Amino acid sequence: MTVHPDRIHALNDAAFRAKGPVVYWMSRDQRADDNWALLFAQNIALERREGVCVLFVLADAFLGAALRQYRFMLSGLSETARDLASRNIPFYLVRGEPGVVVPAFVEKLGASCVITDFDPLRIKRRWKEETAEELTVSFLEVDAHNIVPCRAASVKGEYSAGTYRPRLTRRLGGFLVDIPAVVPHPHSAPPAPEVQWDEVLGSLTVSDAGGTVDWIPPGPQAALTRMHRFIDGGLSRYDAERNDPTKHAQSELSPYLHFGQLSAQRLAREVGASSAPRGAKDAFLEELIVRRELSDNFCLWHHDYDSSACFPDWAKKTLKEHGDDHREHVYTYERFRDAETHDPLWNAAQKELVVRGTMPGYLRMYWAKKILEWTESPEAAMEYAVNLNDTYQLDGRDPNGYAGVAWSIGGVHDRAWGEREIFGKVRYMSHAGCRRKFNVDAYIKSVEELSG
Ligand code: FAD
Ligand code: FO1
Image 1 (cartoon, rainbow, N blue to C red):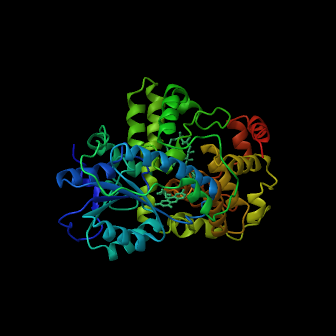
Image 2 (cartoon, rainbow, N blue to C red):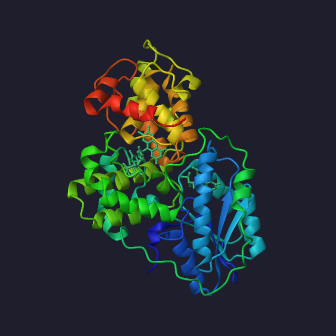
């Protein structure tokens, strides 16, 4: 099976070197199985009777990530490196600025071409632009993260899920196919030095904000185990209970999806094939396919996705009109970080974020909207929400997060609602509204029982 051409995007117009192994520069999709970018690299190497190897460039800092995220990622990568080695595909870990170390690696290895995976974040676009300027061989990008390739699904930033959904559903048939296995590779690339994973983690100088997260085991194998457990358990309750933080009906697969340790396409196919009720499956696939892939569309077409500049005009206008409204509560970043507001529900959500590195989906909306209400301006709200989200969320530093924060604070992908203080026509959420939806006291109590 070939890789669908709509997944492939040329990053330069250089030719293949006549001879030499194929390099897959792995970044977003950190798994050996169900990975279209790796499959594409292997196909090329098989046709050219060459070896294929994987390169991962470790950045010493990444969008505010702390040790908890690096620990989860590196542990998953060590498993992926073993998976690859078992199929005669060496895994190289190199540190430094990609624009420098990738071209140097390619020249040293005499590689014939470089394949990499798709990621709409600014930092990744910069890494690729700087690399493309230096590379003298073909440099191709494969979208291994989205079921419908992001660049092919739309030629613009979509207004809402409503405008994007038909574009995706119309093309799902051609893309939501089974994914072939990576075969043991018959040609050998030069062997990679053994990665000293503990030394690598120990050498990082990032903060240890929030400490270790231990409720979710990292790695592709653990991801599949949790996926099957969710499909056999929580999935059937998903539509009815996903917005109730006390019911634990969400999959909690986002850290695996964020680090690419689990393929969304594999998850979508397994959910689709399950015996769970249709309504529950549709509700889950709406989030996994439409909402998640809309986030990539948002970040691809709005480079200012983490600032108020990306808000739709109606939201910019209404928030400006209410910019001078009286704020009954105004908190500093530190008061938010330390969960010291007047609202015990908000504080509990923040405490779960710091202690567990996660937060129920419904409360993420409430959490971000209250930051808008309790800061001087939408600009300050965006800065605080993005920083807290990217420092403590295990699944942070992700298009889903930037789109989620911009939806909550700036009405991105949402419509205007009844006008009120501070929010203007941006959708409002209240503590009382949460009490009508779920047992707030039970949630607060469950967080108080958390360690830390
Ligand atoms: P489930 O409900 O089990 O859904 C399965 C998968 O579908 C998720 O893992 C995710 O990939 C996708 N998904 C679900 N809901 C959404 C959504 N609203 N938007 C986009 N994709 C979705 N998600 C992140 O991955 N990282 C973040 O940093 C993040 N920050 C957020 C911040 C705010 C303010 C808001 C409102 C949402 C944020 N989300 C983020 C989206 C969503 O809340 C999480 O993806 C979800 O709660 C993760 O838990 P789960 O895997 O159990 O989700
Ligand atoms: N991708 C890399 O290619 N190299 C890194 O060193 C790296 C670190 C990192 C740390 C935390 C985190 O949440 C993500 C990180 N990523 C890194 C990127 C990640 O693989 C995803 O591609 C993006 O974060 C999501 O788009």
